[in-house]
Image 1: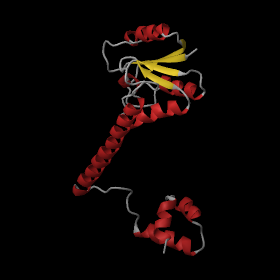
Image 2 (image 1 turned 180 degrees about the vertical axis):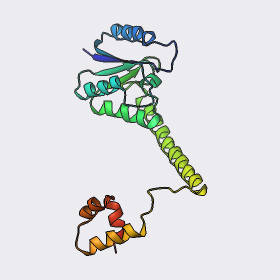
Image 3 (image 1 turned 90 degrees about the vertical axis):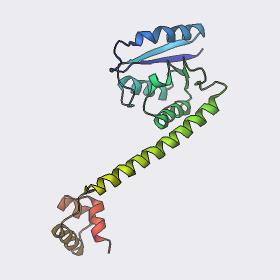
Image 4 (image 1 turned 60 degrees about the horizontal axis):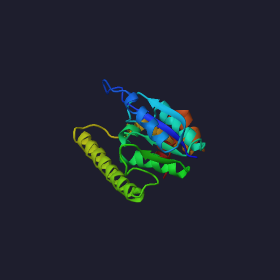
Length: 194
């Protein structure tokens, strides 16, 4: 007997949408295949973050193996965080021995014929997403530098640097110096390495 968790979500921004558009179909599918429904996880939140109460509860229960399969309407109802986080969620479920299935995307099925191909495609998209994010971040930092903005923590004054070095010369540990001057341990290490 397969025990299934149903996950339904609409964004708070989706005017006029309701999870009641998804749930009856998910229930019908589960019934048609003889699945026992463990629980329905229903949310009215943006899918742009994994910090959703029902999403977190779903994963906590999946970790406990309280069900065998997560059934959701479509991948964008499951997560809208991008390819990399979504791939990580699916891999995490499989790592716990929990399958997944998209009701409207037949190819997105952890036990389906195209499982490995879909995972490969998602992994490739995730890699490209990481590259694009890195490129955008670097471009943004370069633009900010060109505008005269300081990137990173502010430079320490000569007086603070002198205090760090004096305390280090007196035999004080980096940790004690950082606590005494209320600066990070990495700042202390930066000015006492030599």
